[in-house]
Length: 229
Image (cartoon, rainbow, N blue to C red; front, side):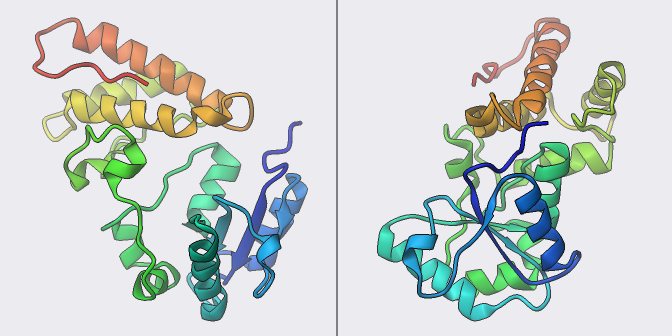
């Protein structure tokens, strides 16, 4: 079985909802290195992941991580333990963004904002700037919490598409454009790892986008262009 974090230096600070030691064991098990030490610039790397717990995180460490990035011209990728868990277990990565409600509920991520760390905007994460309303970024959580849609391996294609169908046709559902834009964004965000841990998820997202295009976009007139990736 291919290890997911080979070559990655991943740092962990804080507990809750899991112990930091448990996250570190996962990193090592998946071929990664637990790294990033205060005062040792050579142990950091561009785009380094830092997993932050909501309790007992080390403020000095987070401050130093921001300063190291400033000194060397790069930004670390900070994520709550829950986001890391989904990335590891389900191949699903939902990065934090400016005005993300998840940040407001997480003391460690809030601390980062308080010391001047600037979370990326939705437009920066999206890459093309086609999403112009921060509310649309909540698509994934709505799809999952309200309609039960995700691309985890145990969910069949038939079930996934039934849930997608419900999501875009229900009276209180989501617009086709919002769903299509979001799935295309997930493909763009993760396709750099298509030959590794994210390959299966990307394949399923591509399949979903094709299905939506053929069964919903082409069957009626729409005023928006179908997203590309």
